[in-house]
Image (cartoon, rainbow, N blue to C red):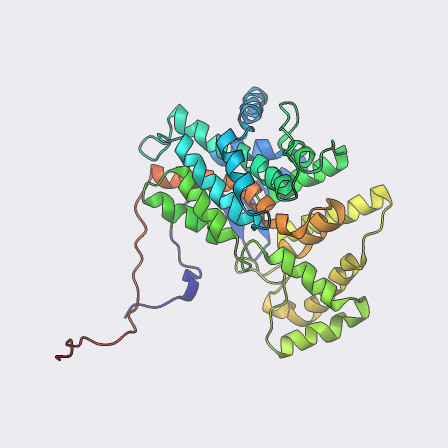
Length: 378
């Protein structure tokens, strides 16, 4: 008998050297470097190179990569015109998936046949570079404004914020946003990464693979959970309402958004980092957030009391929505595209790893339909 495991939970589907998780001890590492050290010492560009190449870049190599990113920030005119033709109320993830897929028409020779070629490597870099531009462009186009051209001087994080808001952000905000990009850059074989790998295993081009990943990330059980966390916090309304709300959700076996993770039986290390960054920013700048943050802290406290024995703790989505909404002032519908922007670095690394040692994915099934039967005679 073949054992059926819903959602392939815990089933090893590949070997990878890109990232690792120790769920019992709350450790996430990219190429062996802890996420805490990368957030503290590295930039997103440095992390993208680490994920791609397997090692941290030299200062000269990093400068060259930043220069290449700057040269590839610009989006093709025809893609810009296509975006203007789309409905203004179109979901940003649908727009992002469409535009990433369309980029393949401009790079017809980027493929798995020669993944190490300069042409294909350039296309992979183009994906990372254009992700930020496309997300910022749609934030402007969907509200009727012309896109702001990318800068060839700013860092990846700073450039995105400047393109999105039309003004140069301060250094604290840039550092905070860069850290968010690093935290979301990679996370082993999650649903969207697996989607990219399955598509890559057919030897599809990298744009098709990343487009598939974007479509997978769009689901609320994957990329959209931080929006649901904000809705939950707003529904609770006051700190005093938290216990009754949580107990009622547990009684009715309803989801408590932002709590629990398949990989972690302790608090998600990314959630720890985000919480600390929010608290440090508040203290340094002497500002007050809305009631959401205090409600979130109480939700975590009550859930630790009630659910810690089951290994249910906050995941990265629990605090990321608060950070995006309260400090960056980013509209909710753009949360998941920013997630995709960061994760593009991990996706292209997995695309490259998959096609270098490829075998097409072809799982089996357990058939539960009708037995063999003859077609009825008339």
